[in-house]
Length: 206
Image (tube, rainbow, N blue to C red; front, side, top):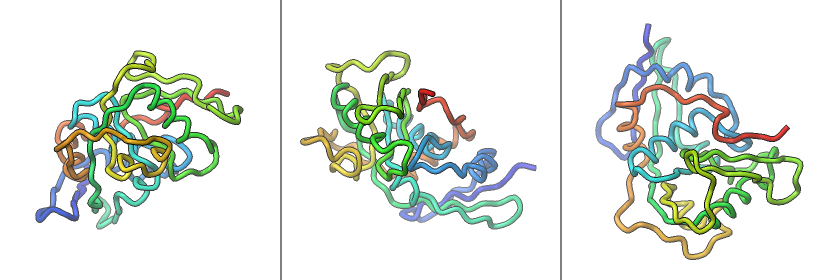
């Protein structure tokens, strides 16, 4: 029997109810977003990137950890309360993006609320390095290009220099791009109800 999930955005007046196959994956997604990629983090950033049709999307582990409150209502029903978190689009060069990613993984494999859940990127990490742990990065199937400008969906917190973005000055926010993440997740679910697999976005050198 399919599991029913009620998805509620706290800023919205109505509840959005779905028959949600991702419920099982969501319930089993006990991975810690402060130390690595998670299914929920991938799903949230996928919804952000899909809405804006941008190159990359990111959310920090600290925000993700408090984004959704799960409540098991019955054997086949789970309620999700999505916090009111603004998302915007910004423009960064590949060089700036590399700086941010290195800052995000600088404590890996230790916990770090600034660790970034990503969509549209594959990041290769060498944990043995003391600095600059990112040894390779791809946007889509193409290696990150230092001088290319990329469109990136992020939380307003990151755009304002929060978490791993604190190493940058004068982040360029696209005017009029603000949306609430709960709306993006709800819209994305209508066409993509399945949770993505884990282990495809961060590649760790052994």
